[in-house]
Every structure is written in C-alpha cells, then in structure tokens.
Image (cartoon, rainbow, N blue to C red; front, side):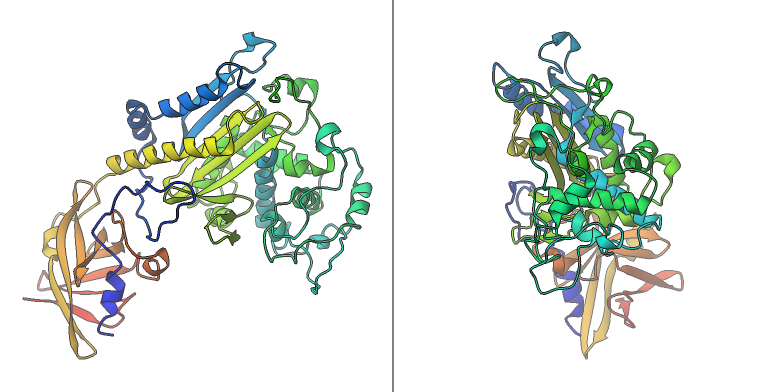
Length: 519
C-alpha cells in the first residue's frame, strides 16, 4: 500500500512534450492526450477563427480542386461547433448547364449515399428506446421472418440488429439486385428474399467487421416490421426528420425533388442518372443538405441531455454515447461504431461516415471531444478525395483546438484557495506517505495541484471544501488505460479543525485513510 498514492498520481506529468496535434492520420501516440473542453461560447470561437482566417486554407484547397477543367459540379462545406454552424461555404455550380442557379449553399440538396446508414442506425435506437424493438441483441428473424441465409459456420446464433448496425453481421457487401447503380433495384421484396436464401454468410456473426450495404437494407426492412406502421422512408420522416427540424432532406426522387438538388456529374462532365435504391434504400437512398446533416451532428454532441423532442433531443444522452461507442477496433485504432467509421485525426478519434453514389460524394467527420464536426457534400465524382477531406478537417481541428485552448475560462476557485495548500501525511503499511498540495495557475486562474513524488494532478473545486482530481491541461506520458483506471474524477475532501484546514481524505482511492496537515 505504501506506493498506492504514487500509483494514483504518478501518471499526471507536468511536462508538455511537443505540439499535441503534430500526428497525422493513423499516427499512433503512446500517450493519453489532454484536450481543451468545448465550453467556449459559440460566438467567441467563431470570432476567434474568423479573425485567424482559419477557413482560408480549406477554401483554397476546394477552389483548386474545382479550378479549370478539373471537375464539374459543386461543393458545399459546413463546420459545426456544439449546437451551431460556425462556417459554411459553397463552390462551383449547382447546374453546369444553367449557371444562373449559382453556387450551392448549405440548404442545397445532394445525394448522400451511405450516410443514409446513419439515419437507419438512428432510427433503430429510437425504436429500441421507445420499446418497439426489444433489444439491439434481438435476432433480426424475430421480426423479419422472411429472411433466411446459408450459415456454413458451427453456430446456431442468428444475425442481430446490433451486428447489422456495426457491419458485424458477416453478410456480404452487395445486395443481390442486378444493375443496382445503373437502373436501380426493381426487384420485389419476395425476389430479394429468394435471392438471399441462396447466399451464405462470409464470417460468423459478431466475429469481425465486413462492410455491408446488404446488411443495412436488411436492417431497414426489419425496422419496418418493428415500427409496424409503414415503410422505412415514412419512419425516417416521422421519427427523425420531423422532430429534428430536418426540412430539406428526403428519399423520393420526383421531378419536384430533383429540381431542388445540385446535379451530379461524372469526371467526363456527363450528368449522373438518378436511380432508386429500391429494397436497398436504407443503405443509401437519401438526399440531404449541409444544414440538415449539421443537426445530426448537433444531436451527437448533446450526449448529456435527456430526451426532449420539443427541442430536437430525440435520443437520451446515454443512448447517444452508445451510438458512437466502438463496436470493433483494428490494431491501428481505426474501426467501426454504429455505423460510424473510426479513424485517428491528429490526437483524436474521429467519427466519420462517407457516401458515394452516381456523381455524388459526401462525408461527415466529427471530433466529439471538441464537439466539432465537418460536413462536405459534392456533386462531382471525386472532386475532393477522401484524403483531401481528411486533410481539410485535420487543419480545422487543429485550429479549433488552438482557439479553444486560448479561450478556456479560468477554473472556479474559492476565495480562500491558498488555505488548502500544505503537506498532508498518513501512515500506510508502516511508512509515511505524503501528499503536497500547492497553488498554481491554469488558463489564467488559480487552481490547486496535488503532488506525490513530484507528479502533479489538478484539483478542481466542486464546492465547499470538496475538490475533484482532474487531468485538464496536462499532457501525459502514460496510456489512457492507466490514467483512466479509476482515479480521474475521484473526490478529495478537506476537513477543518478549529476553523482551519486540518486534513484531507481520498475515499475513492485510499479508503479509510486520513492525511493530516503537517504543522
């Protein structure tokens, strides 16, 4: 026990080594990084980033991609911080044959391809929380009895809703429907299920990820049975679009709908055809806008709120956190969530989803620790590649982090904070164990630092004589597993004797021990 408080505190190093954002995509850091808290007011971060011309680099990259004869079509981008769009810009043209329609805006519709899967996954969580779906671990055939598939593996377990949401079902990628992207899927439900009966699983369900459009088509059609009152398209409209105030998105492609969209183009300049995904619609049918997709990101960032549909909070915060938790991680820390794709962006894990369909490409990228998200929609085939978009997002994340650090408010502190400083000791396993509490500064304000053996941890004031162990502001040289092994967030209580601070206790880490203040 004598080294227990060293174990508690030795992970909290004061030394900050290098630029915390110097790592590029998929560069692994052996250290658990300290991030600024996204508590800065939206108008303050917007003003700061505008003054720094933070958006100019992104604008230049996009303009270069669209310059000359490189690519037809248009691009629109948006940057979200917490609950507001802080930057949006359109480039190129909505309609190459009708330049008078101008450049696309944040309210211009684009096909979003596989980002549709985000909506299908969100719908699944809503139906589960409303009690219509018994569990994410329910077998899909409990609701969709028509579905059968060959299972060559020695398991009697079926495919679950959770596995469909996270690409862990073992199903093949493609839906058994010929010429899906040329003429659309025109097969009936009965024909689809007949074709599925002749297909076999490629992996045992739950064993490893395999990206599957088929899986999301199946998920959406199973949700129709769960909901029980119409088609997948209707459920998305009623349970997702309407309560979130999403007004310029849809799944129908009538002439009236198409007239609202930016027209998609292939690399040779020819206009892309509009096809219906048919049975596979839940995997990639939707069109949307930057403004509407921003509302999805804002929902993700509200992971501490209860359900309140009057304000657009259609998921409980706990469910939001479940939505983005990893389902599978590869050794390089990329992986899958529900259905977010995880990649390393600097020192952050970004939740991303991209989509591609007939002359359109789209991408959402979010850094939840900073409550910052980026969406890019383009009506041209690969005007900006996936890696171009990652580079733009990384530069914006770097600047957002920089400005958040600069704008962090000073910590709250009691007026008499200096009276808590001093050395506090107890006996552990027959040896004296000492904690040194000193006064330092963080973001321009006073804060306590508790040290043992030279390793400090901040103590954030929580009221009265109570504080909380925090790593805010530190760069650390230990893994997150060790640092988050039950010590961050633990309370430190100071006790008074004859009006003065006389001792402290850490019941969550050193239960039953009282550290008395040295005289």
